[in-house]
Image (cartoon, rainbow, N blue to C red):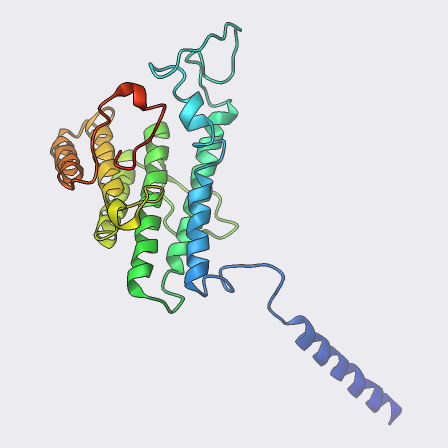
Length: 264
């Protein structure tokens, strides 16, 4: 009889232990316990924007290291073997080259997670469209950075499992087509989201999408794709920005480094 009671107590203990351990973690966020509110969607989008500020992207490399061998910068460094590309010596061994690749895919992974959960919270549909439109544009922009610097690259449009480490590269044409698809969808979603309405130009608005699409098309039309049919799209999207009446050319080159008017 004692053995039966001991066995019953032991089984009850195991059952209680399983119930105690079978709980959802509460000390960190994951896609299952995040994206519950509009504020969390916006925070996730802010994280995608902040990724562009990494030193591997526009925090340093895109604005300095990748322009130092153009007419924008004239370096006075004389040391041989400079590893920052100041003397047209970029190669795959440099951390700057790998850094752009890694940081772009970090941004893309976060965007994919955001888009997969975009309909999760109950919120105003117009606000949801603005967040979705910016996210789609930014995914397209990350891929534009990747393909314009590396050519054929993996095209990842969903969050990957931890063991999905070998992902084949898509052709550059396929990447451009996806960039175009994302940005054109963003253009529709942001059709009423202009710099005049927002009051500042620190986020993606309608004409930002259109201006970058023009840039995408001019790259697409040039080497190595040489799809000259895209030149007409360059004109179309430049005209959209011009005729919006929201922007103007800076009349004085000397002002570029002194002030940045809201209309520019």
